[in-house]
Image (cartoon, rainbow, N blue to C red; front, side, top):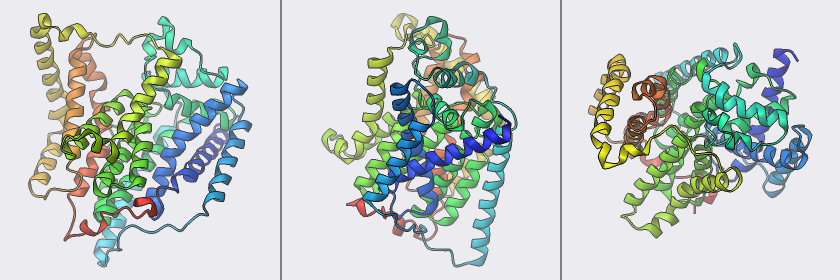
Length: 457
């Protein structure tokens, strides 16, 4: 199979995944703009389609696409039978100023151009990152070629470097697209990652246009598209780009839950939480921090916290952990040394924490002091925005990474150098929501804080 043919087939598989996602997302995004609907369709499709694929291979022990396509058609038909498709509404009023409209258009063109750069670089060659070869690609290709999920992926000590405890959503997504395209092609399958970036851009743009202003949405989408530490060729094949999508959608739904308390917002939060928790362990940490903030917002009342959306944040990580324990029982990871937490090693731990912080400042802060200073000045001269609640969560998430590096079984300096920039860049799209929400102009945000879905009661 030639590369253009494989790429076209993967694109068709990605479109089928989006349509399946749309069939379910339409029930909780009615009244949203097209960009938000598209983002949620991609996200929910990436949740549902791998699960359907897993169900098919569990029964047939084959990666043939026919059973999956039959399920896809049935699901879409059932969705349309239950409720006919409705119209989409553009979120927010159109800016009246010609200069403002031109500025928004320019920002969106910039975002599209930056996305195109990543798209071309991602599919220019087969995926080659070390973590892709050792983890995500190895698991995905093994599942595709064998037609089932081998238990050795979780329990074989010889594969312990492949992180048996990590979630399987990304490998299953790659295997699912390979099944729909008729073969495993590392270069064509990289299309999954530009699709995830595009969904992230649409989510940021659509949410801020609805809750703040069209200018805020366009500006934040442009900022996210320029996050080249995340959207670069080496990250194609890794879980960070899908995780960034999950964190953004979880943040958007979380802010909608706080603003409206609607059932549709809680359902979206549950879907985004599944995507985040089933992509990487860092997603689970983010969700638990969101749950902690919600608990504080509900004045430490657990029942009210649960009813107002806490269930949507807590159930997905528990469900994932339960399924892994029940069906996989992975061998314990060897990446961390918990003995550093014992009193006898506290002095050594303190030294490692200092080493980690020093290395982060040297390699992660000093090289980007200009944008860090610009962001600091932006916060100084702008008012509090609706997404400022995400700030302590993002800070605590980074501190969690510092703690993980400090108790690593390996050299903490090597851990910082190998992954700090990459995993913190995953947080930037969610941070862009905070920046964009501070761009509210003259009360634009007050009239856009409602969930337009009829299910918002």
